[in-house]
Every structure is written in C-alpha cells, then in structure tokens.
Length: 276
Image 1 (cartoon, helix red, strand yellow):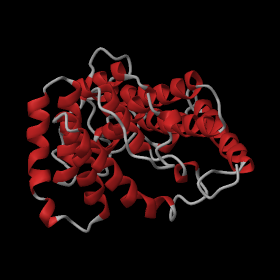
Image 2 (cartoon, rainbow, N blue to C red):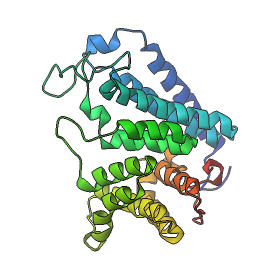
Image 3 (spheres, one colour):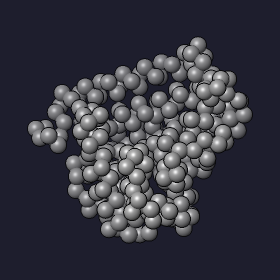
Image 4 (cartoon, rainbow, N blue to C red):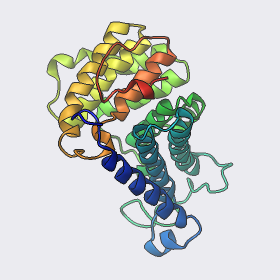
C-alpha cells in the first residue's frame, strides 16, 4: 500500500501484533485475582476485552482477512460490552452485581457495580461494534438493557438523546427514536463548538436520516461526521488503525444499509469492505 490514504504493511503488522497481545493480556486476567487486588469492578475486564477485540477486528480488516474473521471479532467486542450491561441489570446473570453498592466514593470497587461502565458512551460503543459486525441481535439485546444510570448521572443531553434514539430504533419504536433526536436537529443553528457534543450532533443527523427514510440526509450526516472526525484521525489517532477506519461512520452506514438505504459517500475512512 503506497498512498497516504492506505497504511503500509509494516504498520498493519504492528497493529495486529499489539491487538493480539492486548487480547491475550486481558484474557490472562480472566481467572486471576488482579481485579480484587486492585479493588476494581469486574466489569472493567469485559469492557477492556470488548475494546481489545474491536482493535483486533480493525487490524484484521486492514490486513485483508476475510469478513467472517473480522466481523466475528467485532461481534465479540459487542458481546463483551453486553456482558458488562448484564452484570449491572440482568439478575439472572451469574455475575450480576447490580444490587451491590459501590465500595468507595468514585463508584468503583471489586464485587460491586460500576454505573460508569453502563453509561451512554459504553452503550453507544457496544452498539457500534455490533453494527460493524452486522450483529443486530446483540445490538438489540444491548438496547433492551440500556437505560439512564440509576445513580442519576447523565452525559450531555445531545449524547443522551443519541443513545436513547439508538435504543428505540433497535426496539422498532421509530417515532419515539425520532422524537428523541428532534430537539437536537432543531437546535443545529446553535451548534455547540464543544467537540464531544458536536460529534453526537453530527451522528444524530445521520441517524435521523435513517429513521426518516431520508437517504440524502443520512449520507449528508455521514459526510459531515467524516469531515469533522478527520482532524481527530490525523491528530490523536495518527499512525493508528483508527486513522484509516472511522468506527462511527461505518457503524451508521451499516445501520442505514440494514434500513435499506444506499451509502453514496465516498471516503477512505468509510471502506466498502466493512459495509454489509
């Protein structure tokens, strides 16, 4: 690979090696007493493993491995995020800790629930991994469990609305999903300059387009998001696999395809090989 829009093989080899070691290192902790010794919530193991498998899947895609290989690992990533939510909310899960109060003021602690691990961003991350895998069953299972944190903490309203809109969309309540996003869409003339808020405002444009069966708005949202995220890809994420794959854009593109919309945006960080 020779252009600035494609990684070199030595980069891909490095990312694969790092991702494989990341998975192996976390897997070693599965039956260890590491979390107990460090007084950390066990959920951290599953969310860490979820991210590790997504990193591996991204590197495998860039290495040209078959879709069944990298999609399986994106699905594993989503599945481990789902496990984290089950620990908090599913009383039938053998590792359920949702009724155990935190052991310190930070809300962390071994043997108890971490509400931080079931906030909006972790739900969005898990659902996006599932979309990248084409695993809509896991995405729906996540949607059934996601809710506002019982401790009352909530992220910026634009982020919260986007998360709840994803939830309602996956549970086939399209009008409720659109209602969640409408205030965000209507406030675009006062768009925030805060990057975290703006990120979710732009994702909301594309998601609303999907829900409204508006192919032009869906693709415009993707285009705007890719343009916005490019600064991040060329900055903090320079020389990483994320520089060449935009998870959020791929995830929403696949959701749009699932809703029978066409992806017309052409951009190297939205590679066709990752689309369903």
